[in-house]
Length: 390
Ligand SMILES: *[C@@H]1O[C@H](CO)[C@@H](O)[C@H](O)[C@H]1NC(C)=O
Ligand SMILES: *[C@@H]1O[C@H](CO)[C@@H](O)[C@H](O)[C@H]1NC(C)=O
Ligand SMILES: *[C@@H]1O[C@H](CO)[C@@H](O)[C@H](O)[C@H]1NC(C)=O
View 1 (cartoon, helix red, strand yellow):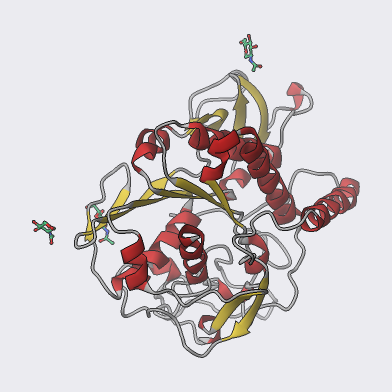
View 2 (cartoon, helix red, strand yellow; view 1 turned 45 degrees about the horizontal axis):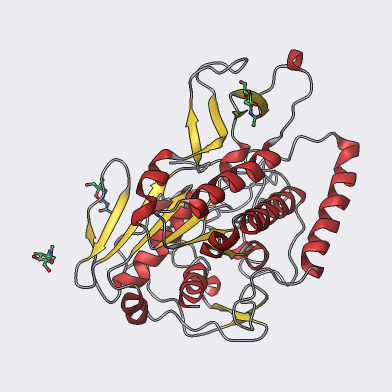
């Protein structure tokens, strides 16, 4: 399954600067408002990457589940340094993932991931980590991927839902049949159906808001992405607004569902690293072997992050006591530094694949969006463990 990278948001050239400064002040504001996700006395999402020679929790040969496109070492990636960094929060330590402790903590419980292929990427990392101490049984069906650890009665589920909302291809108003319609006020039906059975739900999405779509609110077409008829005049909502609306709709439905007694963890927008152009116009992360010291600022990623965090806060505030079911995993900033963590050109076994820029400077085909497994995404699961534990 392929996933698109991002396109720049639909803003005219002169607006870009203006939007950029608004977004930057919003980021600054979020930071000065203080940590939103302080857990105990330590914000585990603020810190830095430090070298760590203890190595990954598993390897491409000790986990049979790694999907081809993310199995970087098996696909011939020559460097390994990207596996040897540890996230060090400013005021505490994030312990190495102890799979036995995790299975003990989660005994009898169900953990579900819902979202796009980044959610799949994180589940794969978690299953690989746990696989080192116990082998789960695959009980997947067409509606969801499902793995059971028989001895501890733990179920791990993944629901494919790239917008976390109801969507269809049927014609709606001015939006033609065949185009994806994303209903901004209707949560995903499969997710809502199974929600009461979940003890922990991890939500991870956002990258499908760059795909051609029409956005529907209260039955009316209010915007679109890579689609909008000129004669319809000005659109009310662009893809970034739609992402904010989706975050609010889904979180509200989850928090206020009286039969859901678990916790829901929103993982923030996963940063990609296509430098010098989008995924489809020569953007590249070829040859990146170390984390950055300082994140590259990206107007689109910043805007998505700000919208999502604002949506999260609004729902927590409006949901009263139920709001305490919601937690934030603020991974965007830490992982903006991990330009080295993506498969790049190492997405397949082809021994003759291009891995370097050509003589004309053109980069090889590559994936700078998903994460190598093993790789920095294993740290998401350490953060998840810590978030559940607290
Ligand atoms: C798990 O089971 C499903 C359904 O039988 C199958 O399609 C899928 O390939 C299996 N996954 C793995 C990793 O074995
Ligand atoms: C799972 O556990 C049950 C009872 O604990 C047992 O009957 C069953 O055979 C186990 N399944 C597998 C595949 O190990
Ligand atoms: C939704 O649309 C209906 C008419 O189709 C209108 O009566 C109603 O007030 C609208 N609701 C909202 C929340 O805008």
